[in-house]
Amino acid sequence: MTTRKKAAILVMTLSMIMVMVGCASKTYADLEEWYADNPREASAVNAGLNQVNSSGEMSMEFAIEGNKIIYRYKLNEKLFGLDAETDRILKSTLDNNLEVQRDNFIKSIDSISSASRIDASLLSVHLDYYNPGDTEPCFSQVVTK
Image (cartoon, rainbow, N blue to C red; front, side, top):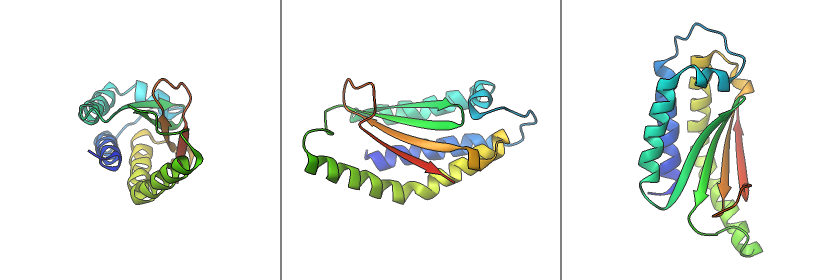
């Protein structure tokens, strides 16, 4: 399964969850508070992660920090930092993949905004890529509305 397909699965899973709970009545300070107050969404996101992680190509983690939705892609082999040309090609490929998926991420932001009643302009999606064993991302991308 390609990275693009994995990201699409998680984005669609998260979007569907947020639409299902769009009738929330409580006002939340941030997305992290909303997510903590809605454990069904956490279960559904984790089910999507299990499907993606079962491929064995890489592992993926999901987190909410403040108003950031974070996807952490943990690579199974070191790809970044081998040489400048490889880094350039990888970053270009990931940027192109993001452009293909951008509308899906924007739809997720809109769905989450509707469900949480937090202004969409305050929400962001972060895609962080890690070489094996790294604690800091070797490449990051951010999507905002």
